[in-house]
Image (cartoon, rainbow, N blue to C red; front, side):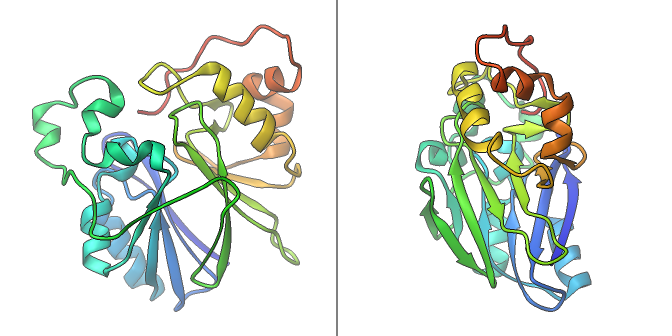
Amino acid sequence: MLIAGFPAGAWGTNCYLVAPAAGAECVIIDPGHQAAPGVAEALQKHRLKPVAVVLTHGHIDHVASVVPVCGANDVPAWIHPADRYMMSDPEKGIGRSIGMPLMGELTVGEPDDVRELSDGARLELAGLELTVAHAPGHTKGSVTFGLPGAADIPPILFSGDLLFAGSIGRTDMPGGSMDDMVESLTRVVLPLDDQTVVLSGHGPQTTIGQERAANPYLRQAAAAGQEAPEAPRRGM
């Protein structure tokens, strides 16, 4: 397994390239603001051939480079239908103006080939099997992507802005809901094995075991009825 990840752009959003090995086909996860040069560099360095872009949600910090990346590599983009509108109307997705200087650097719109994700779908791409889990809370169309473990490789969860090391995604923007977030954490995250490696949309990697023990939001989800910590403001 090869996973090349890097933080990109004004929001430091993690973009990942995932492949069975160097020199193989790959999937690109969340090419956000100013991610295109990093994607091109990683493709060349690891001799990868992209077959698809997959998106954990529609916020501009995760999708800003979808059009140039898909166009340069002639690949489709996958997104949940509830968040698809944000690719063409990013300001509607965050409830405020992005700002003219930054907006001038963005390529707003959809790539030529957009395909829609559904809960429980299994995407067989680049020799990988990604399991999709619909996980609203940060946005209505947020999803996670899971990869099964094998031999000495633990399971992997690409959590987007559902779960971070020590925190969770914010819920105060259009489509966000703390109730939905807690339900998604309970349904999607809590059943996972403690050894599962979490690669999130922002910040460092962690594991489910570490978050189960120390993340106050995940602990609150596990103990129904406890008062939730104050909602975070991390991410877009």
